[in-house]
Length: 254
Image (tube, rainbow, N blue to C red; front, side, top):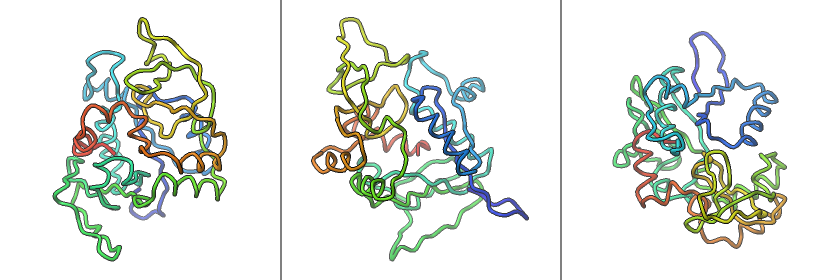
């Protein structure tokens, strides 16, 4: 968010669109922005490709990691000084290294060794020109905390967070959804299963889990039994190496 000189504070919803997002999520996002009256700022990775700042090795390459470039371009264009996200420390090891206020330098990069202390929940919010913050207010929550809150407050979500029928193939221990950018490979049997998504990102790297949980209360009960974080259980991009997420965050990833 930012404050323009001589104006009241405006609320922005800023997001990056890789062009490979789940349609259900995009539809929900657009309807939510209309209902809340917030200004929706969408940075399209296709525009970065057209500018030449993002280059793909092949058309079906995962665009998830590339969206850091598009995000940084949007931050620079709109002069945002703070972006609020919903990341939590229990998602992934690199997330646990970050603070609630994550300082990013003028290149949009995160330096783990330069974390600012947050003793007694006091935050150093000083910025130099060109720098910005990523703020994670629910950093100390768990996946269970989130679902308990959703159930208590009756918060609406995109339907893919709940059980639904979807065609999938089994690949590297994951259920890969069949989409135009993740087709079945030769010889892979296609199954139609009841699944839900624990986390949602680019279609090229986000997988569902088998589940019959059709309500927030049922998801809470299911979450009580899981032993693997939602990213560990459903994200193909985090399986490339233990340092995959930390490397991307250093490059500007949210």
